[in-house]
Length: 296
Image 1 (spheres, one colour):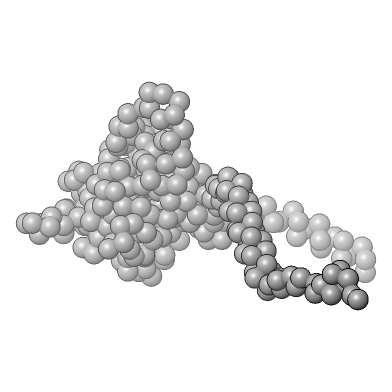
Image 2: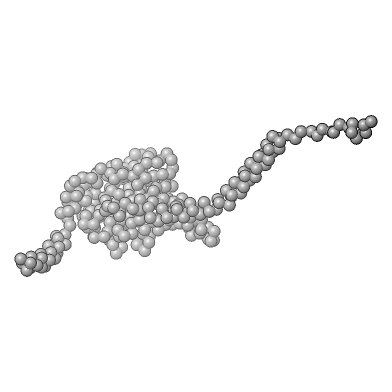
C-alpha cells in the first residue's frame, strides 16, 4: 500500500517570463544612460562656453572683429546701429588703399564723436567690455572713416566744380556721399576748403556724411594736421552683418580706381628718397667691382 507521500504529485511552479524582465532591465539602463548624458552635458557646458569665448577673442585679436556703428558720420553707407566686420589681416598683405573704409583708434589724438557714459559698477563694466569685444556696444575710442589720401597725396577742396581732388584728379563721390532720404539732397564734398599734402605714415580720412562727420578736416589744428597715423589703423571694414536687411559688402568705389590717381601719386612723391637710394648703391657697386678684379 502506497503512502500518501508516495502518491502525492509535485506542485508545478509558474514559468518565469525572462523576456519581460530583460525588457525592464534594458529600459532601466536606457534611462540611466540618458540621465548620465544629461548630467554630462550640463557639466561640459561651462567648458564649451569658455572655449567658445576664448576662440572668439583670439579671432577678434588677430583676424576679424565686429564693430558697432554709434554715429551717423558714415551715412548712407553705414547707419547708426549697424554692425560691421573688420579684417585685421588684410593690411599685412597689402597697403591701405584710397576708398577703403577703415576703423582706427583715435586715443590721444581725436576727441570722441559720441560720448559714451562710463559704467558705474564692476558688473556693468564687465558687460560693456564683452559687448565691445563682440561688436554689440560702442567704443568711444574707435572711429570709422573712408580713406581719401594716402602718404604723398596732395588732397584739396574744392575745384571749380566743387569736387575734392587728389593729386589734381577730381573724385566723383556721388555714389557714397550722404543723400537725405526725404529731400534727396546730397551733401557737398566739403563746406570747408582745405589743401594738404599727406605726410609719410599718415592718412587723410573723411566720413561719407560730410556735414556731420568730425574727420580730418575738423582736426587740422592737431599736430598731424588732421591726418591719422597708419599704425593706429585696426583694419578694413569689409561687410555689414547686421541688421539682416542691410547685409552687404563695402567695396572700394570706382572713382578711386582711376589710373590717373596712381600716376599722379607716383609723380607727387619727393625725389629725394630715390636720389638717396641711388647714391647709397654706389659704394656697394664699387666694392663688388673691386672684388671681381681681385678674383680675376
